[in-house]
Amino acid sequence: MKTEGIEAVFLTTHNWGKAAKFFQALGYDLDFATDHSSGQFRNGEGPYVFIAEVPQDQEPQTRIVLKTPDADALCPDPVVEVVTPFEDTHYGTKEMTVRDPDGRLWTLQAPAKN
Image (cartoon, rainbow, N blue to C red; front, side, top):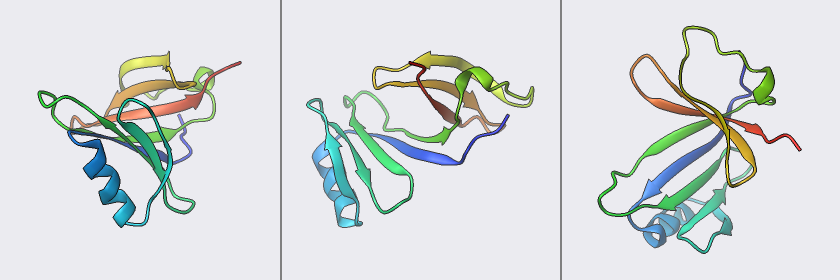
């Protein structure tokens, strides 16, 4: 199983506006915003940061997204615990969730097949 490195950092927040201003103060530019308190930020050629607001009863989370070129060709090594298999997303990709030995969740993201 191979990935192509970090594609993105996905964050949830209780306050989209404050989180957006924080990242803009650190040099990130808003690439696009949705109409439901979320958006994508970029800073140079590095991974993008996607931030989504969640209700107060949900704990803010951080998820690292690793890029993989082809969901169908990926066969995880038995050392990799698959939490959820590749599924289509509403934003045009396929995502799999895996858990590392310390219990952290990671997302593997591949392009959707046309």
